[in-house]
Length: 389
Length: 77
Image 1 (tube, rainbow over the protein chains, first blue to last red):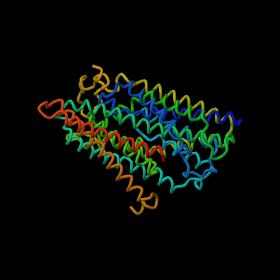
Image 2 (image 1 turned 180 degrees about the horizontal axis):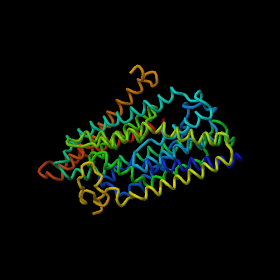
Image 3 (image 1 turned 135 degrees about the vertical axis):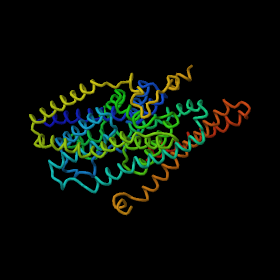
Image 4 (image 1 turned 120 degrees about the horizontal axis):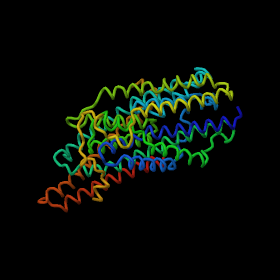
């Protein structure tokens, strides 16, 4: 296949991955705000989309390739990047269909590892880096965020006594707007840049850019727009799981979970620890569920979520390895056929999801709540409306 | 921990955990004090309202300052 055509396919796949990353991770920032009624669902995803877009332009310092150090840089070719991206996209779609929050970054890393294994052999994969950049952070992030959220929730309920002072819920909802906005901003800064790194890597591999070059402006803009569009699309299934199925969240818990997540995320970024936003926010939601007196956590849902985290890397690697075997030679017919099959699979996932649709209209339906408690319409009035009223 | 130490810098790990703990718990505690003061000012009019509002404003300012500092530290890195 002509290099330019292959490059265009890889860039398209990267932008589709960025889109799925956006809608898959909307829940990280906005699930608790939607669950507590701090924001209407559509307003929440619109706010998150704008902040993801802004975040994409804030810094370019992490726009190095996401797989840096995990596989030998000399082994990465356009077909490997293509196979890795498809593996990650398909895993994102599977976990979205079943409503499980899983790390898009780990899916992408898994995809690149799988494709590299079949194309360049095991020697091109750095096992030490996988443990340092994937395994340990995956254990550390939810534990740390959960601990911070649990302690913060206990302290917050002890100080503010929201059970005795119902008005305090309103103030905590205002706090949620700020904390959720910060998570969205941090997500845009981190995740959009990973796709920028992938596209830049493809451009370098195709000799369109010199090694070490910064992403061109059109790459920054397209990645920012793709992740913002995905965020606005709204991964309602994952939002429902994070907001209702893991634990029942009250406004003070939503605030403490998001604040704990932001604290861990920003501190880890500053310290250079590659922690996943999804793992941090999921851990914080679990922690806040444990921190409130009488709070319940659905351990069945939490266990399934952890299983998805464990499976993310090998599953994406397996899919990408299969694709890598087919497209390894870079033959035009194979790549076109795989692209067509992938598009057909994405359509199948979409149609399957329509059998049991979750949307902005029903994301807060209490049937999936861990306690089954129906949250009253008064409690759900968004704070901006309350302020106006 | 020694096994983890061969993969990650344990000093960095300890610092990240400590700062995240202090920042996460500290900011929520300050915000909760502000919420408590605001609800007191609203629901208990016999209490000195001006003092409650001053306390709430002070706590919120500290929350804002801590957040701005955190963002600045990350973006300026």
